[in-house]
Length: 165
Image (cartoon, rainbow, N blue to C red; front, side, top):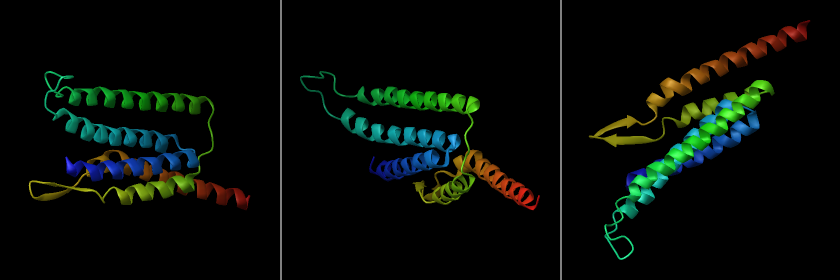
């Protein structure tokens, strides 16, 4: 259980940092990912707390012990992730009908920072060091990074052609 505390803290601070970046840049994608990461952090934090609580022996209040507290963690985690998904969905619908300018420069900075931070946390499994977020990076962050870079480049080219005209 001690091994989960560091990923909890890293995920919590990164999600808060990412949320601020999403708000400042106007990026729904970054804000939604921050909510997802926050849900992950809360999952780890709740699991840590309730797993420890579930180890308590039976007493007068809970005759059969506290074992079911670990199940409560699953319910709370589900509620957090559903609330985050609902917020992201409403925000996306709002942006669909009321588009806003996205600060591509700031978004690119956050993509680079996210790229770098992904390889810091490592997990030791069966004596082998494995990057925890490598699969997440390949399947979700890398395409976003590439699209942001292409968007950034196209915006710069468009701005140059408008200045020459």
